[in-house]
Image (cartoon, rainbow, N blue to C red; front, side):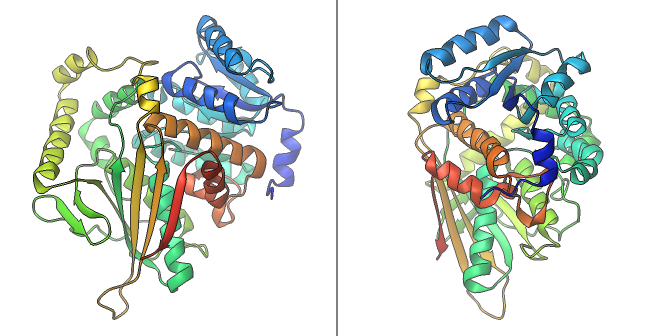
Length: 420
């Protein structure tokens, strides 16, 4: 059932496009466009937008070949240096999917959406940039009922959604708040797209103080939580009775912890509060101690390489350029799986209740991103039921809640949650 407010309905009445896909010719953008063609209603009014008309026309031809009978997307050439041009197309859209190079033009797109009353969704994993957006635009977006959903891709959305779902399971089935969520990357391809590389390079070149601030557990949360406790052995390993052997080698842990903790902070004053002592931890699932230590070493070496200017310059010669990424067909045949366990706050019991959730999809990471990102946009367009009573603001994928979970399951994601 739709929860779209009168305010949002009124401003959407005269808008030309249901969805604007901004940055459509990039690697993730093109996959998202293909997903929309293959899964969204054939009468969807939408546009693909970017800087290059030639690239947009090539993409439009490819999309028409996929389904020549459906309503085809219109082409919008946008120069981000000309705000009037960007504002015109954003103001004419109900929902904007942004898959641009975030460090270069990400903020200007967010600003345009807030000022023009357009709901927004992205896959930006850049904590300093997101902190800027929160500081500058959250309160205005709350007041004007503009939903800004950040990090709705494979490297963050499953983490946020599984956390939200397991915490709720504990609350509903055991009437308990959550002490910690343990999340594991069970199966996922590690190849990066050019856009991901661009973000990694930009964030790694930050000054030390800004970088340190971005790694704080509560960097995006409106309230400060408790200090993290030691969650692994001295070797960086942890064995969980449900999830198995885990290594503290997840490269995206810092970003995802900040995102999940923002969800915690925003929901802390609602009836969906996770609990005052909540913590989020993220790991890779490994087969042996040796495999775990190898993962930890590789992650550390990658982090060191990204902090050294000369090594970053050399690495750029070998990493994908913007618009490039893993082999599409090979990635389509791989598999993505995540698992999580929520552990209740102790209440005099030696073995507190636990809730388990899993998320799997029969294709690789960027195909999974296309599903979650596009279906997140569909949730904003058709239902717009935001958790916690929110009507707008800088929010996270969990705020799309059950509606997003139903949509991605209908698209082929296998999602399970239950007590263990």
